[in-house]
Length: 351
Ligand code: NAD
Ligand code: TYD
Image 1: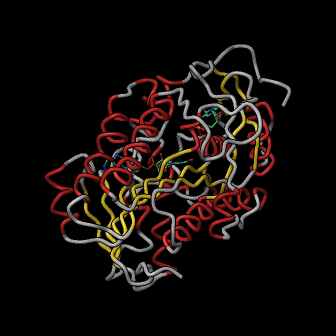
Image 2: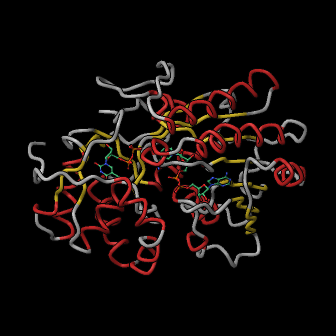
């Protein structure tokens, strides 16, 4: 066991009102009831205070609204003293980054710099930079290990690669205790319904089309969000992780059409909902990560099977319409109209 104060430490979780951050905060406060948790979140379109309802009233919880790129806010906050800073805050949607990369560079690169600069004079026990497997670019064969070249191919992935390497540089240059994680595609409750699984589930519930980009054969490596959270908690409690990179994934490789098929079955909807749309520019064909290093170093293994996790996730969206219906309005509908070009050729075929 590590000397880090994981059980009763002071945690700053940035981006904690988003999908993965909120699920992480729930898990953290469940596992370590004495931990003092501050969430810093800008509440962009993707940040949702309701995601923190399960912990909001705890005496050990505090919410601060603000931008990680705002040095005047971040400096004094970090100066209060934290044992752990876990940076989930980011602009995260590839399609939006293609439309307008500016907020991605600002948050995913400059925001990380601002956090690291604030931490430099106020040492923490560990800074976790939540990076992504998308920094490797498309992986056409096998699985990327941590020493694979970084070849990000869209502005989201490139900005995340910037934040990832900047965090590492603060370890190598200034000795800030940084660990970088690169996780594969997450799914689970509280995911903003612009991403594949929640978009398709909520569209299916409403018998609306499931827009398949291109051939639908693009592959992703899926992990349940709780398994991701458990991996982060494991790293916080592990010695010798400073200056290291860890891939996180569960080895559930699926094509978009396979996912769509599963979701149609689970929601009892017909195949006629599959709709071809114009492909995403620069659409990465495949991501796959090799997680042997994490398991070897910490013993972590994923616990949720894809079948069980996806069934539970569909049930959650079916049971929580009050959570997602308000999100699929206003700005979201404008984005949806702008982003998707439905093609007249009917449903794609062949998995
Ligand atoms: P999300 O879009 O659901 O949430 C992002 C959160 O960050 C939101 O609450 C948003 O309000 C907040 N935020 C955005 N800009 C901010 C800023 N400037 N200052 C403070 N808060 C800000 O994203 P997510 O899916 O939960 O992803 C969380 C992290 O995990 C990101 O860093 C992402 O790159 C990484 N990641 C995501 C996946 C995935 O499959 N979703 C996979 C690997 C890594
Ligand atoms: P997404 O959830 O945006 O994650 P990623 O960051 O990995 O691209 O998309 C996952 C996969 O699903 C990706 O291959 C693109 C595809 N996709 C569609 O075909 N249609 C959609 O409407 C969306 C959102 C994604």
